[in-house]
Image (cartoon, rainbow, N blue to C red; front, side):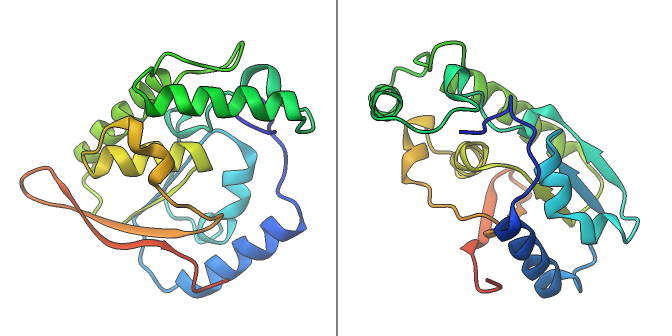
Length: 182
């Protein structure tokens, strides 16, 4: 379990996925790259960073902290705690968390702050590299869904979402979790 407390490098599959993503989308004229503060997002978009596109890092899109689970192999006990927490979130208890970890409410506060920041940016083509749980929360936020719907959001490593900010402040999705590059 990685979470925000484990700043590990990509594994071999992660590098292959990053390369495939770059090869498929290198033609897009991104005006800004935004990553979490964690190394694996930097490595995922390295091809774009090498093009000297302006780059911002923010902990607001870091992966959620999985507390005492981070850095440990998955066990039946951890799996049970995780599923209890997810069930609590789905039932509306957004303050539930793994011991020493973040709650859905804490994650949502970071993601909402990030979305508000993005809305102030002058760039129209921003590449954002983040993490699984953060993506689930971000997508529910952009769609105006409650955080209780996070589990319904599908995501894959290097899955591409294309969302356009509308004049009324809502987001229109052109693509969701596109993995055709893999």
